[in-house]
Image (cartoon, rainbow, N blue to C red; front, side, top):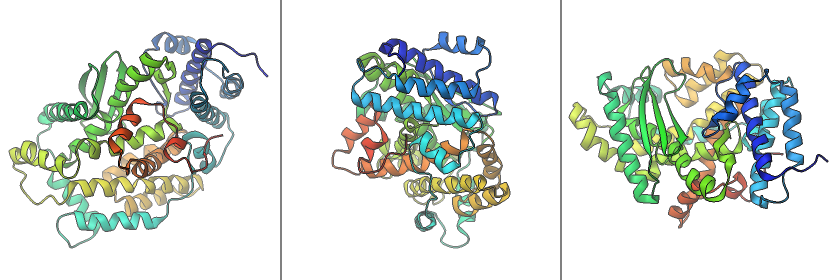
Length: 411
């Protein structure tokens, strides 16, 4: 067995490994696989190095797993880090040509079983949408598209101000629920990005909320977007875990987060539940009606926003199934048709979906949405829900903490 290093040295090696694997994936055509802050010196070192070999990175991950320090990390933290290392190793091996089937890669990377999601779940979500959308006649996909169109922002110049107002309201509500550290969130409107929105916590109480101006904003989705990426979603999680874990406990591994991993299955679950955490019941719809929709002249029946968003969250499983179709060698057009049928995507959304199937990290990561949402829906359905929300945002939870009776996917 390799010689054991102290905790600080081990964490530095872990950070370098994650950054090198992220660089290797990027050079292989993947989108960013690492979310980081406060490690600029190590990131610059990695970028200045000779291009890393994927096979060597896989060996390094296995070596780090062998020498997890027996002193300095408790059993739960060691298990969490073992989960993350398994994800990094599996991705490095895949980049090295391992050719694992997607179902196996999902198990190693995001910590869940990559089995197909039963289509009965999508049928149930469609039934929910049918009841929640206004207008009870016509194909469901058309009614959903009409609902989106009825709430589209017609003045792109108003986008920054609307995002800033929504970010302020979600932050206010999150602070009332859990308390937040001093933090400044900058809103950046971008173009040409592969995402609709993204929340980036940058350390030291600084964060950026990115919104893609190329994607028309459905005002009914305003909080669905901003709460997921900001508060109490990704930005809030980063800020609170810096205070509680990095500063409070010395958990420096929180500064570099490998995205196709169990850690992000939990994070995406938080993001998908963020709106319902900050805006119970119909509170988001009432706020939007009183503060945004009426002033923009949108007074038509909007249906039940919360139920619509809940149903759409349950359709993330269709993305997982479409990824499995691609992995089986089925034509991309067949996978996109599957998304059109079950996820009810519009033509514009289908064009954007192509990018999910093109990189080495997208296939496993897409499973984090469905399974993160499912795991947290079950775990948060408890009398101590406020305490569990706090734990999600301040503790280093594993998937087995959320579903202790479920067989672990990593290993």
